[in-house]
Amino acid sequence: MLDAATTIAISTRAPARGHVRVLAARELPLFRDHLLRLDRESRRDRFNGSLDDEWVARYAEKSVNTGTVILAYFEDGIVRGAAELHQADLSPDSLPEIAFSVESIVRRKGVGSILFTRLIAKARSMGYAKLRITTGAQNDAMRALANKFGAHLSFRHGESTGVLDLRDPMGVGLVAQPKTSALDVARAVADYNRAYWGMWFKLAGWGKSS
Image 1 (cartoon, helix red, strand yellow):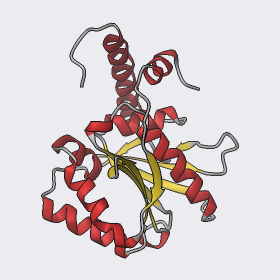
Image 2: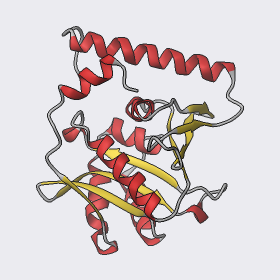
Image 3: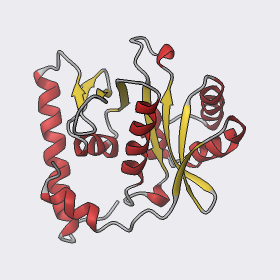
């Protein structure tokens, strides 16, 4: 269930006006160019580090060549956001892994939620029961999105990780990884409190909007 602050924040965003569809392999340049347009902070959040353009371009090509399903969010014919569904056989625990990237120009429009929902539907249609989501520990936007869909991600080795159970009757449900330490819990609580009060301060007009 969304708390009051989250509900207000979502309702005050300008709605997304684009559309989402699966990219074909021949459309690799659209996906690559989207990743290359990510600003420094967005690139760090997506890849858990600031990586050069050559590495990002190779990553885009490898993703397409290994059969990754890419759902792209388009505005005016340009890919501004993407949700990736990586094949299960490429993961050490045989769980398909998902990842998201949204350009700053379309932030706070609900694009992440749209991509998340569409990716869940796509994964279910492919017969998957669970998905793994991993992101950098500093990726506040992704942790907030995870919280919106039911749970915090757990923290390990500089990353946030969790498992999305597609059998959840409510539609989504993030299951935290086992063996979460007391320090992990304390960090999660602190992050939630910081995000909660930061949201209210912004709504009240205090502080600088990001």
